[in-house]
Length: 285
Image (cartoon, rainbow, N blue to C red):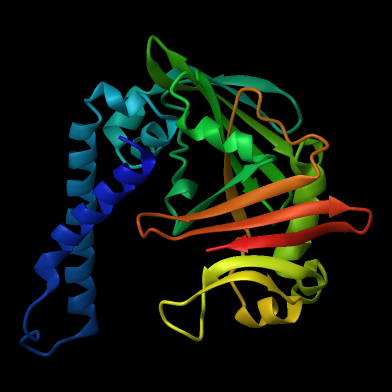
């Protein structure tokens, strides 16, 4: 089962569980507190049932074929997650000190992957094929905090055919092989004036026309036109997954993919570096 199918499964399940919320108007005083209480109970039941269904699905060996399928389940099913952490976890602090955490010390559930979307970075189109490579035995999930300039990497190893979390490393972005790009992107994502100046004046786009339904724009546009569309760029805490041999050192191209969680949304931003610095040169939606 691919990651996309796995996400579709979760979306369908949430839709089916949410169906019980449709009905007539609430009787009684209709207080906001009562409504909030009912909603929270329903939400709790949905989460519980989602976990239960994912725990059952995780019994299949196919959950370990692609890392995408594994990590989707790992972050959402507590029982499965607890069984896939190889204690003691080797934790490297930002100052380089190393400690080993046992189960009673470890409390990071990697919930940052459960937001509205995740991001992933590629230095070339060929790196994208790694997502579908079932022979991978090592993968790192990266939590990139653009606000404080830090990065946390969660290292997974395939042990006896099963993905296991084995280590966690904290570091400053400036020592990462993505430092050059991420330092640029931090400003790009928060400063609208800088972002406008960092868009190629001949930007290639492939997207639905915001002014005409069912019409697609595929061609070159001016930066002013793109800025007027105001697409939301990822900021704050972003994510990445990398595999063995996947490096960004010295790359003149970075493709950032923004993928919605179970809603089918996928946007791609391609940046290129030249003598004038990094520029957004291609956008697809």
